[in-house]
Amino acid sequence: MKTSPKLISTISGIEYPFERIEEFADNGESLEVFIPNLEKAKIKSGEYLWQRFADFLPFTQMSEDFHLGEGNTSLIQADQRLREFTGISNLLLKNEAQNPTWSFKDRGSLACIFMSKKMGEKVTATISSGNMGNSIAAYGAKAGIKVVVFVPEFTPKEKIMAMSIHGAIIIRVKAEDYSMMKKHILSFAKKLNLRIVSGNGPIRVEGYKLTAFEMFEQMKNKVPDYIAVPTSACGHIRGLFKGYRELKQAGITNKLPKMIVVQAKNNSPIVTAIKKGEEHVVPFSNFHTVAEAITTGNPMGGDEIIHKAKKYNWLAESVSEEEILVSQKKLGEVGYFVEPASATSLYAVKKLFKAGKIEKGATVVMMLTGTGLKDLDVFQYYHLNVMESDIGKIEDDVRNLLKNIYR
Ligand SMILES: *Cc1c(COP(=O)(O)O)cnc(C)c1O
Image (cartoon, rainbow, N blue to C red; front, side, top):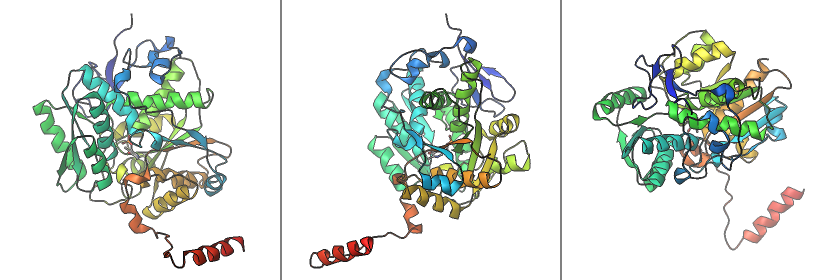
C-alpha cells in the first residue's frame, strides 16, 4: 500500500495536504510534492512515461483520456555551426516546441487538468502571457473543463488566437505592472474559490519532471553535466531538477545535472540575485523585453531557485535584447524556429563557456521551450528577405539567381 503523497514547502519544509487549492505555502514559498518510498522506486515497463515512472508520481494513474500526445520530443546533437558559435562541443537540443501546443507547458498542463478533474472542478483558471494559457485551454478543452485565462495587454495576438480556438474565456487585463496584476487576481480568486494554476504549482512541476525521465531514457541512462533553461515562473527548471534528484534518491543514478538559469537582462530577478549572492529575488518592473514568455518580474518561486543555485552550484546568466535576437536568428539558420524566450539559452551558454564557467568537453542540454510561430511581432526587428517578381520576368529572375548560386 502506497503512503499518500503530501506537499512540502521548498525552503522550510512546512507540510500541507496534497489537495490544496492555493499553489504556494502561507509564507509564499513554493511547494513540492513529497513522493513516499522513493528509495524503493523502480522504472517499469509501459507505453507512456507516466506508466514507466509510476513509482515516482503522486498519481497512481494519469488517465489516457486527458492527454494530447505531449512528450516524446527530440533530443539531438546541435548543428556544428551552433557548436562553433557557443564553443561547446557537446551541445544537445531538447525541442519542446514539438509538443501539442508547441511549448513544454503541455507536460505540466496534463498533470494540472488531471488534478482538476480529480478534485471535481468545473472551472480552472490561469494568468498567462501566452503559452501557459494556450496549453491549459487545450487540455481543459480535451477534458471538458471550462478554462479562464487572464492575459496582460502585451500578450501576442497569435497566442490569444490559439487560446480562443479551444473555447477558453479570455480576459485581457489593463494593469500597470504584470506582477501586480497577478497578485491582485490571486488575492480575489481565493475568496471566490477559483483555483488559479500558476506556472510554478507543485502539480504542474510533477508533469515537467517527466521531461527529466524522458531525457534520461533518451541519453541511455546518462545525466548531462548542464541543462540551460529560460526561466520565468520557475516551474520548468525545478521540475527538471526534481526528476533527476528523485532518480538519484531511487539509486538509479548517482549524478545530478547542474542547472543553468537563463533570463533576459531587462528582466532578470533571479539571475541578478544569484550573481550578487543575495537570498531573495530582486524584483523588476516596468521593463520591456522581446522574450515575452519570460516576463515574471517578481516570481514567487524565485527564492527556491536562488536557494538551490547556491546549494547545488548552479550557473546563471542573462542576455541582452540584441543577444536574444542574434540567438533566435542563429537557431533559425540551422532549422529551428523558436520564440525569443527560448533562444536566450544559446547566447547564455556561449557567454558561460567563454567565461570558463562551463568546462571544455561538458555535455550541455539546451531546452528549446517554445515555437517562434506564436510571436510574430518580433519580425519588426528582422529584414524579411523576399524577392519580388512577376509572371513576365520570373524565368529570367530564376536564371540569374541560379547563376549567382553556381558562380
Ligand atoms: C513558460 C515559458 C518559459 C518559462 O518557464 P517557467 O516554468 O515559467 O520558468 C520559457 N520559455 C517559454 C517559451 C515559455 O512558454
